[in-house]
Length: 288
Image 1 (spheres, rainbow, N blue to C red):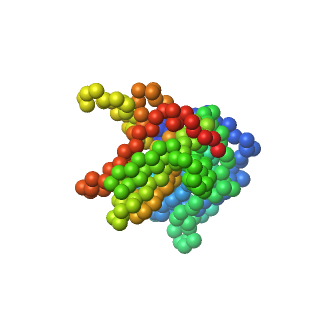
Image 2: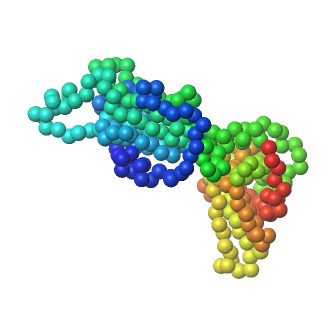
């Protein structure tokens, strides 16, 4: 297991200036976590983890997933002669260190307490709860995945009953840009896909790119791929209808270019459909 915290995450964590509206915290007020030698403690965050700090070298860990921190007592290779001596290096109830987890919109801190291996009630994973989170306000306007998800849910709860911004039909497929929304520095694309054939659709990719509106020579075409920072539904298969919200950080492009959206099916199918979105469509975005 890779070590983090004093070597990796401490130096790769983003540098930021944050303000909190919460009072100071002292060690005695921190919630406690129990940890035992030879057992990993998994801390599950409701949003991607930006930074983790372990206050002592008695603890080590890594990030096996963007929203999970895996912590354990540091392994110290010792000889058979020293094993008995090491076994009493911690006493039940000793404070081993402080764990600090920083998400996109919060900071949470825990006091880690040692429990002997005889304790069968030692926890192996916890979900970071709202009561343990202190909100963080970053200088730049930025939303957490949790907030983006809520905005997307607000959009998708509204029926797409107004005239769509763009529509394309091909091979019994219909791709529709229902609307474009903007919130702070984020652009939300509300999209709908309809399959009128009896063959279900296995989606390989939905690709977004900025490309030249007019291509005089194929070799001169410049394509810039764009990746959503968030999508509401990761679904890869639909039978008849599929609606999703795709979120991008604010972008601009000149009138000589268009946003190209390509729906591509898996395997050797030729069922691919494309849509061109002019920048004027983005400029007409609604707010919510």
